Length: 105
View: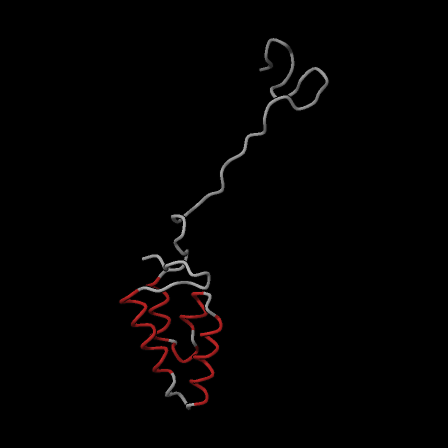
């Protein structure tokens, strides 16, 4: 139904937009300063796929992930122990993602 003036909401007599645009604030799923990555997922990936540095790749720490992978290959698999211990430490102590934000629980 049209308003009594015969114009649609948001238009003035010249046809230009007279009302402010409706905007919504950006959706924030997690509190400010907390990573969107889970420490449980990062820890489990580190324990199960420590050879590949998967936990660090998931967290966005590609430098350490590549280093874990290279050490594992060079040491014929013994370097995978680093990834496994890293995964356990992430589960116990938490950690930070690639941007330095703490992982969420």
